[in-house]
Image (tube, rainbow, N blue to C red; front, side):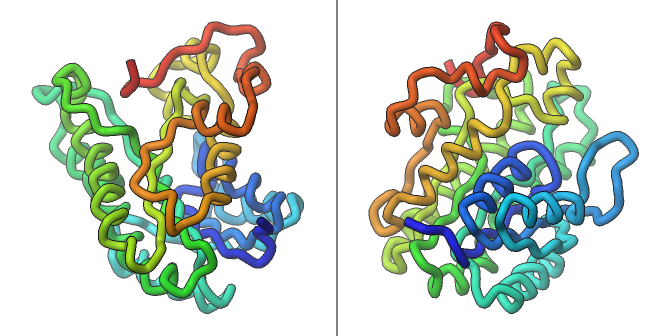
Length: 272
């Protein structure tokens, strides 16, 4: 299957997993809608919608940078409309934008609770809602959401109730859309890493030690690529794990994805 001229709308594409997916799919010839909430450099973090768009073009894809704040319904609606108009449609939506703060209930500021719900669960819902009319006309259309499999064991909530609720809200959106969109042959799936991934979030939460125990975002991007190749009329309602997806393709050695070669890799937060 070729991705030439297929259009992929990615939220939170300026760094980390979103950027890795953008570059992977660009190397396969796709059109990439590079979105982020800011179009100017962050004082502490790398990447803007413009720098990533330049990387996309160098990787072999076509880029369209758009400033989108997933907390704003109007911003999302306008961004999706502009992207569909620019490229002539949308074939894949990647709900990657996410906010994280791991605190227990007594000390978490309510405004940070609101932020995680707005970006994670609500943002995923809004982006999906406004992308669906275009996905109905897409070629082998997919919605891929970066959220974990749902496990109601209280241990997954104990130390970070708010964050877990927000991420499971994303996962429940996947479940609902997979059934709602079956008649249109639009796949709705979630993808989650088996290990922690070396992103700005990990650096912020765990520092240098966290990065040493991480894998590169490219493992998630390679898994996403394999999912997008699946038949959207059949492969839906799944909670894929990056390593499992790649094992299906025959990959057994994942050392090339280690952030630090030979380091001990840490399992992800939501997985046994």
